[in-house]
Image (tube, rainbow, N blue to C red):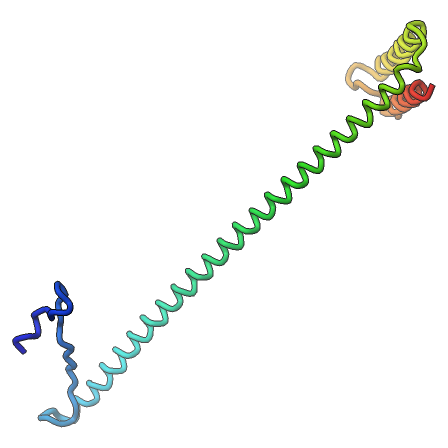
Length: 169
């Protein structure tokens, strides 16, 4: 018993405490009433130890589950970012292709223009359409910029048709 508080040579700096088990049984001078107390204490201690073990396992499972959720979220965010970047690049490439296609059409259409007189006629026609739209706007009243009878849309469609016909010519 004199060695109980000393550290062993293998575990330098570690305090070794001997395990003592205090159990009372129905023998050794104890009355029979002590046995019931002993069983109750043993049952309570075992229940306490079991609940501590279950709580620890539950915490470990919860921590593992949280780590898994975080990993899944991180992976989903990375996947979403990659796909978003891919969509952005694809849209940029499509936009660039449309721009190149449009510039090719414009470069092909430029030699077809004959003179500045056609440009003057085009400007006059555009001015006429704009004046017509402005007169319709003034007829609609000061409170509303556009008539609610579809005349704005008709004017816009007429302008689009004019521009398409002009490009074809």
